[in-house]
Length: 368
Image 1 (cartoon, rainbow, N blue to C red):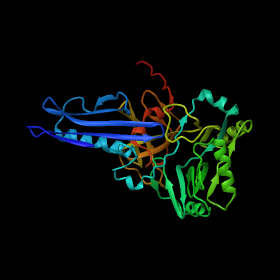
Image 2: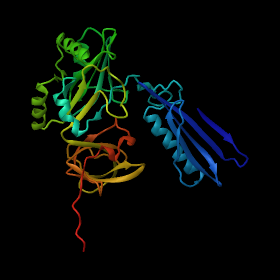
Image 3: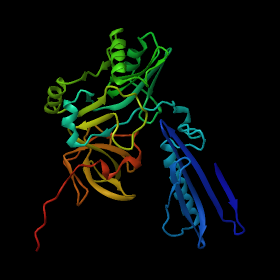
Image 4: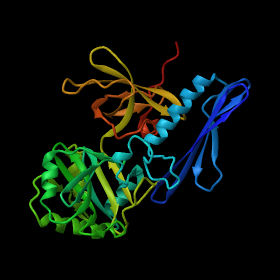
């Protein structure tokens, strides 16, 4: 809720408490404008609901009320855009401008696997492997004649007619998870079918049910993503790498489908052959180039420039873009040999951090 307090000198203090619930995650975020030393500061607190909250401030020194109000409003917008809501039940996007698009359905997000563990995952029997497609995450829901596309934020989005027409050919309701590339959805998981929720079932069970479902009707623009187990995983891993594919995903065959992203590790892990990251555009340069930035410990870190190809519109400052790169320099933060892949309207600014980067040390400079 938002509370307003009147003071004799007509200074107004505002505060808000927001909630976020997803899977086992149940978080709270509070922010307030508080008077201090004749000015105002913006304070915040966050953490798991019912626990001791971590506190901080967005203003290291008091500022005038209008500046504090601007900082406070920006903070609230960022949190509600991420799914936090004033509603204590924690329903994402409730009481926000995105409420009409909120589906209440969240996808499972993956952490990268550490390099040292890749070889073990290739050779074990507990994980299957799927190709990681170079597209946009898209869940597809069929309810009667209604076909709904859902992005990684849980919001309803428009989908190509080819995908919608293919989905409408199946006689039962379903919810599938996949990666949209052009006018095709590459499907890798089945969450719900004909009244049965499969999310608590093992991945192996869900995958075989998905295969059976897709075998039962004609769907030219829904493609099953094959799963590979031991010992064929190794051969296909090298095939994908040599063919320049984006990467692979390793999935625990016994694990249920769990919405959200675990704080570390997880039952589904991704491994990219090419380094990619999401950046915030800071300014437009000459010759179709834009400057990039990332966050590092709450501070802005320049990340170099990238040229925008002629077949893409030039993104505006403040927009999030995806780039492929060879590596990043730790000292300067710049990415080497960047390639622009496109805008990302499903990535938050807070996710654009230096933790995404793979670094290479710069050569030592000789003393003068």
